[in-house]
Amino acid sequence: MDKLFETILKHLPSELIPGLIAVVVAFFGVYFFKGFRNYTDAINDRTFLTLTVAIIAAFVIYQIQKPGMPTLASDVRPLLVVPDFEDDERRQFKSVFVQQLEAFIGRLNKDAAIVSVAAHITDRASAKLTGKTHNAVAVVYQPKVIRLDDKKTVLCFSLLLLDADANKAYPPVSAEIEKDTLQDITALLLGPLVANQKQNDPTLARVEELERKVDQLATAVFKATALSQAPPAARKYRAKHALVIGVNSDKDRQKPKLQYAVSDAQSMNAVLSRLGFATTMLLEERATRAQVLSEVDKILSSAKPDDLVLIYYAGSGIRSTDLWPDLSKDLILSTFDLNLKNLEANLTLNAVVKRLNSASDKYRLIIVDACHGTYGLPMRTASTATQAKTTSAERPFQVITGTQDEEYGLEVGSGGLFTSLVSKKLNDMADSNGRLSTNDLLAATSAMIGVGSGGRQRPKIVTLSGTEDVFLDSDGGR
Picture 1 (tube, rainbow, N blue to C red):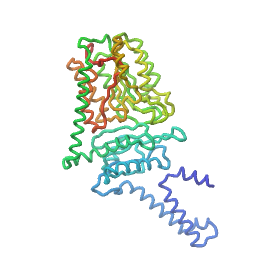
Picture 2 (tube, rainbow, N blue to C red; picture 1 turned 60 degrees about the vertical axis):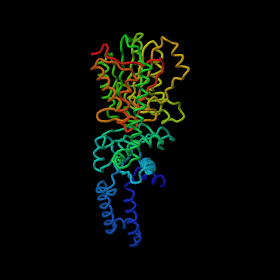
Picture 3 (cartoon, rainbow, N blue to C red; picture 1 turned 60 degrees about the horizontal axis):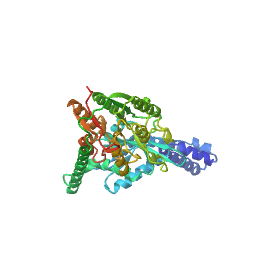
Picture 4 (cartoon, one colour; picture 1 turned 180 degrees about the horizontal axis):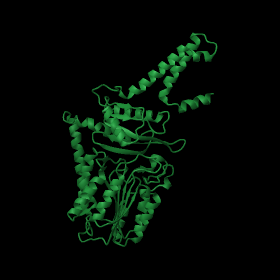
């Protein structure tokens, strides 16, 4: 009997439980008050039937009216709307999620409020409609609970910012959300509220000025590095090859669907073609781990010394330790056949780097527009840098990303923030028949990326071999 009762409660929607309790109380109230000898008489009693109908009617009316009921004072704008999570039968993970955000945000803004709605929001359009209905700053959508095993559970969700019409996907994060992630979410949510207060608050104005100086400093560093690592003007590539990868979603819907990874890849493919690259493009179901690595091998086998090999990836970057804390650090590049329960079954940044490491007589560049930068990628030490100077045959190998290792990528307007700015700069360069080194490229875009993300996204460059920058030009382009 206990197991039967437990099974019923597990599968019974939680919003029905109060109504069920009310019916049970009414039944036993009638049964004992009227002194019935058996339960059948109580069930058939007109008083009990009337009470049951009244309870059901009241419950139905409440459910209909609930979405329109005021949840806050009229002068307080809801900060965030949180719907039900997929695969969260008892809403326990949703409850913990909301509690963590309320506790963290409440330290900074006690008036901030989070609205919980008893509904599933599975796409951006529905999130936008819900946000407008509640006049909210942001809406969580396509949230999901993923159980990796009996002891490990992670959460996935996307965040839509109504005013900026921007969204950010959070691939698997621990159910006990890390401080860095809470800070990122909080900064996005409070940003619109803070913006309205800057004119009247000198402290906030000073913070904004400090953020601008940080962006300027980052730009200055990229410019200085570009000068010190500038390749000779006479240097030319024999040929240029590019593999372009774009993945919005995986076949099993294990992570939030991105909006623009595929279109970003298409935009980058177009501009690289303008710059004279022979391109291969893998999108969605074609972008499996095996296919990506196979295409990398094909390009490396066909490329000759002094060719440029470029790999571009747009999709979700997942830190291995967010799934399995005991594993070594690595960045999973989500493919269509993503497998969150088996790290070795996935494409990783280190796996791609390892293949390109063997092609030391070729110029190599990896561009990643995803969360978490180059997480887990070994940094070149001073000793290896010195060794690279003495190995003249080894060509430069660099990785540039739109985020730092702890950051999440932002999608704005009609594309990823990083790719939108980079592809525009490369198109401008193609128009002028110019030439840009990797550090020149980031110097030209880093400040705009910082401003566009509210200071929550900064590009990054890692030099794995060589002492010069890889450069991009329109030689051989059209």
